[in-house]
Length: 143
Image (cartoon, rainbow, N blue to C red; front, side):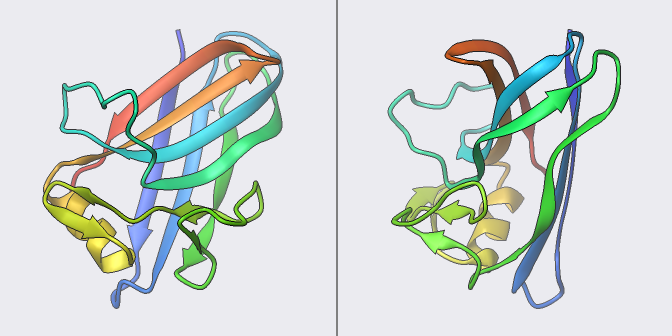
């Protein structure tokens, strides 16, 4: 059993997003972590072919200790930090992908906030040992 804690906050002008993602894993080890925002309403499954709206990390290597809070990623991003449409994104540079979510075209911080406000955005954190998925935690984002 694994749980996650996701904290996020936009600044007043919707020019930056602060975030911190913590997991509480049941097993120890060195893992690769993916963390991203996806579009789907609470209680529904995201379409398998739907890409993420935002990738924060893509297979970042993290050591996790069982039954301990592990911060898998945290930081602050502005639109200048985002690689829009994922041309050059990696673990050091988050990506934002233009797509509709909850009737809102996501292409900046304000539109991401509006999609969250409609209840259409969730955070997903997955961790792997080589190619084997060890855990997956989903958390719907609400305003």
